[in-house]
Length: 209
Image (cartoon, rainbow, N blue to C red):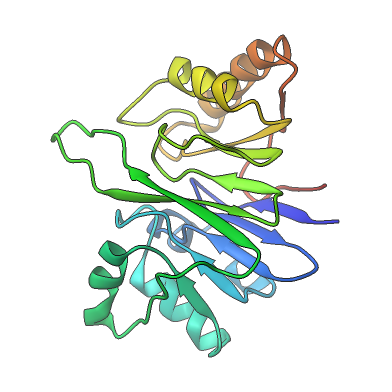
Protein backbone atom coordinates (compact mmCIF):
# COMPACT_ATOMS: atom_id res chain seq x y z
CA UNK A 1 0.00 0.00 0.00
CA UNK A 2 1.23 3.49 -0.83
CA UNK A 3 -0.03 7.03 -0.37
CA UNK A 4 0.44 9.61 -3.12
CA UNK A 5 -0.04 13.24 -2.14
CA UNK A 6 0.07 16.12 -4.55
CA UNK A 7 1.37 19.39 -3.20
CA UNK A 8 1.43 22.08 -5.92
CA UNK A 9 2.59 22.10 -9.51
CA UNK A 10 4.88 19.07 -10.04
CA UNK A 11 5.70 18.42 -6.37
CA UNK A 12 4.44 14.98 -5.32
CA UNK A 13 4.96 13.14 -2.01
CA UNK A 14 4.90 9.33 -2.18
CA UNK A 15 5.01 7.14 0.92
CA UNK A 16 5.64 3.42 0.46
CA UNK A 17 6.76 0.67 2.83
CA UNK A 18 10.39 1.34 1.88
CA UNK A 19 10.71 5.13 1.57
CA UNK A 20 9.10 8.54 1.73
CA UNK A 21 9.93 10.23 -1.56
CA UNK A 22 9.38 13.83 -2.56
CA UNK A 23 9.44 14.63 -6.27
CA UNK A 24 10.45 18.06 -7.59
CA UNK A 25 10.41 20.42 -4.60
CA UNK A 26 10.12 23.66 -6.54
CA UNK A 27 9.60 27.24 -5.43
CA UNK A 28 5.86 27.23 -6.14
CA UNK A 29 5.26 24.75 -3.34
CA UNK A 30 7.80 26.31 -1.01
CA UNK A 31 6.31 29.78 -1.36
CA UNK A 32 2.63 28.78 -1.45
CA UNK A 33 0.66 29.81 1.63
CA UNK A 34 -1.98 27.17 0.89
CA UNK A 35 0.47 24.35 1.64
CA UNK A 36 1.51 23.72 5.25
CA UNK A 37 5.02 22.31 4.91
CA UNK A 38 5.11 21.70 8.64
CA UNK A 39 2.56 18.93 8.13
CA UNK A 40 4.38 17.41 5.18
CA UNK A 41 5.41 14.32 7.11
CA UNK A 42 8.55 12.27 6.68
CA UNK A 43 10.76 12.66 3.62
CA UNK A 44 13.69 10.24 3.36
CA UNK A 45 14.76 11.09 -0.18
CA UNK A 46 14.15 13.66 -2.90
CA UNK A 47 14.03 13.07 -6.65
CA UNK A 48 14.65 16.10 -8.87
CA UNK A 49 13.85 15.67 -12.55
CA UNK A 50 15.66 18.74 -13.88
CA UNK A 51 17.21 22.10 -13.11
CA UNK A 52 14.31 24.56 -13.49
CA UNK A 53 13.27 26.49 -10.38
CA UNK A 54 9.68 25.27 -10.46
CA UNK A 55 11.12 21.77 -9.95
CA UNK A 56 14.02 22.45 -7.61
CA UNK A 57 14.35 25.20 -5.02
CA UNK A 58 17.61 25.31 -3.04
CA UNK A 59 15.72 26.97 -0.18
CA UNK A 60 13.14 24.17 -0.15
CA UNK A 61 15.92 21.55 -0.10
CA UNK A 62 17.67 23.32 2.79
CA UNK A 63 14.38 23.32 4.68
CA UNK A 64 14.06 19.56 4.11
CA UNK A 65 17.70 18.88 5.04
CA UNK A 66 17.28 20.84 8.27
CA UNK A 67 14.38 18.53 9.14
CA UNK A 68 16.31 15.37 8.33
CA UNK A 69 20.09 15.45 7.93
CA UNK A 70 20.32 11.96 6.35
CA UNK A 71 18.00 12.94 3.51
CA UNK A 72 19.42 12.04 0.08
CA UNK A 73 18.82 14.12 -3.05
CA UNK A 74 18.89 12.20 -6.35
CA UNK A 75 19.11 13.79 -9.77
CA UNK A 76 21.27 14.25 -12.84
CA UNK A 77 24.62 15.99 -13.16
CA UNK A 78 23.11 19.29 -14.30
CA UNK A 79 21.15 19.55 -11.05
CA UNK A 80 24.22 18.48 -9.07
CA UNK A 81 26.18 21.33 -10.67
CA UNK A 82 23.34 23.77 -9.92
CA UNK A 83 23.19 22.83 -6.25
CA UNK A 84 26.92 22.59 -5.60
CA UNK A 85 27.29 26.34 -4.80
CA UNK A 86 24.51 25.89 -2.23
CA UNK A 87 26.49 23.04 -0.59
CA UNK A 88 23.72 20.55 -1.31
CA UNK A 89 25.02 17.13 -2.31
CA UNK A 90 23.33 15.23 -5.12
CA UNK A 91 23.57 11.49 -5.78
CA UNK A 92 23.48 10.86 -9.54
CA UNK A 93 23.25 7.07 -9.16
CA UNK A 94 20.20 4.83 -9.18
CA UNK A 95 18.10 5.04 -5.99
CA UNK A 96 17.17 1.80 -4.28
CA UNK A 97 13.88 0.46 -5.57
CA UNK A 98 13.81 3.00 -8.39
CA UNK A 99 14.77 3.36 -12.03
CA UNK A 100 15.09 6.29 -14.38
CA UNK A 101 15.25 7.35 -18.01
CA UNK A 102 17.56 10.17 -19.01
CA UNK A 103 15.72 12.13 -21.68
CA UNK A 104 15.44 15.76 -22.74
CA UNK A 105 13.12 18.41 -21.42
CA UNK A 106 10.62 19.42 -24.09
CA UNK A 107 11.80 22.43 -26.06
CA UNK A 108 10.78 25.66 -24.35
CA UNK A 109 10.04 28.95 -26.18
CA UNK A 110 13.67 30.04 -25.78
CA UNK A 111 14.76 26.93 -27.66
CA UNK A 112 16.44 25.30 -24.66
CA UNK A 113 16.16 21.57 -23.92
CA UNK A 114 17.97 20.77 -20.67
CA UNK A 115 18.55 17.19 -19.50
CA UNK A 116 15.59 15.65 -17.71
CA UNK A 117 15.53 12.50 -15.59
CA UNK A 118 12.20 10.64 -15.47
CA UNK A 119 11.95 8.54 -12.29
CA UNK A 120 9.91 5.44 -11.50
CA UNK A 121 9.67 4.11 -7.94
CA UNK A 122 8.68 0.66 -6.73
CA UNK A 123 6.95 -0.05 -10.06
CA UNK A 124 4.24 2.21 -8.68
CA UNK A 125 4.51 5.74 -10.04
CA UNK A 126 6.43 7.44 -12.83
CA UNK A 127 7.25 11.14 -12.72
CA UNK A 128 8.43 12.29 -16.18
CA UNK A 129 9.44 15.82 -15.18
CA UNK A 130 8.93 18.14 -18.13
CA UNK A 131 9.32 15.66 -20.95
CA UNK A 132 7.11 13.64 -23.27
CA UNK A 133 10.08 11.42 -24.23
CA UNK A 134 9.93 8.68 -21.55
CA UNK A 135 9.09 5.30 -23.04
CA UNK A 136 7.77 3.47 -19.97
CA UNK A 137 5.37 4.20 -17.15
CA UNK A 138 4.42 2.50 -13.93
CA UNK A 139 0.69 1.94 -13.31
CA UNK A 140 0.42 5.53 -12.02
CA UNK A 141 1.73 8.36 -14.20
CA UNK A 142 2.19 11.96 -13.03
CA UNK A 143 1.09 13.82 -16.13
CA UNK A 144 1.99 17.47 -16.92
CA UNK A 145 -1.21 19.07 -18.20
CA UNK A 146 -0.82 22.70 -19.22
CA UNK A 147 2.77 23.81 -19.74
CA UNK A 148 4.65 26.47 -21.75
CA UNK A 149 6.10 23.72 -23.91
CA UNK A 150 2.98 21.68 -24.75
CA UNK A 151 -0.80 21.41 -24.51
CA UNK A 152 -3.56 19.30 -22.99
CA UNK A 153 -3.71 17.48 -26.34
CA UNK A 154 -0.04 16.58 -25.93
CA UNK A 155 -0.77 15.33 -22.41
CA UNK A 156 -3.55 13.07 -23.68
CA UNK A 157 -1.35 11.69 -26.46
CA UNK A 158 1.46 11.05 -23.95
CA UNK A 159 -0.83 9.10 -21.63
CA UNK A 160 -2.25 7.07 -24.51
CA UNK A 161 1.25 6.13 -25.65
CA UNK A 162 2.44 5.00 -22.20
CA UNK A 163 -0.87 3.35 -21.17
CA UNK A 164 -0.78 3.74 -17.37
CA UNK A 165 -3.75 2.54 -15.36
CA UNK A 166 -4.08 5.86 -13.57
CA UNK A 167 -2.95 9.44 -14.12
CA UNK A 168 -2.53 12.24 -11.60
CA UNK A 169 -2.38 15.81 -12.92
CA UNK A 170 0.73 17.94 -12.37
CA UNK A 171 2.24 21.17 -13.75
CA UNK A 172 -0.77 23.47 -13.71
CA UNK A 173 0.37 26.12 -11.22
CA UNK A 174 -0.42 29.15 -13.35
CA UNK A 175 -4.09 28.34 -13.89
CA UNK A 176 -6.87 29.40 -11.56
CA UNK A 177 -8.65 26.80 -9.46
CA UNK A 178 -11.53 26.91 -11.94
CA UNK A 179 -9.15 26.52 -14.87
CA UNK A 180 -7.40 23.54 -13.29
CA UNK A 181 -10.72 21.84 -12.64
CA UNK A 182 -11.94 22.46 -16.19
CA UNK A 183 -8.79 21.15 -17.91
CA UNK A 184 -8.54 18.16 -15.60
CA UNK A 185 -12.19 17.30 -16.17
CA UNK A 186 -11.77 17.42 -19.92
CA UNK A 187 -8.68 15.20 -19.87
CA UNK A 188 -10.43 12.84 -17.46
CA UNK A 189 -13.38 12.44 -19.81
CA UNK A 190 -11.20 11.84 -22.85
CA UNK A 191 -8.85 9.31 -21.24
CA UNK A 192 -11.75 7.37 -19.69
CA UNK A 193 -12.56 6.16 -23.20
CA UNK A 194 -9.05 4.66 -23.33
CA UNK A 195 -9.45 2.89 -19.99
CA UNK A 196 -7.13 5.32 -18.20
CA UNK A 197 -8.43 6.77 -14.94
CA UNK A 198 -7.53 10.37 -14.09
CA UNK A 199 -7.32 10.69 -10.32
CA UNK A 200 -8.34 14.30 -9.84
CA UNK A 201 -5.95 15.47 -7.12
CA UNK A 202 -6.03 19.16 -6.41
CA UNK A 203 -3.28 20.81 -4.38
CA UNK A 204 -2.77 19.14 -1.00
CA UNK A 205 -4.97 16.13 -1.79
CA UNK A 206 -3.91 12.47 -1.63
CA UNK A 207 -5.06 8.97 -2.44
CA UNK A 208 -4.01 5.43 -1.55
CA UNK A 209 -3.06 2.68 -4.01
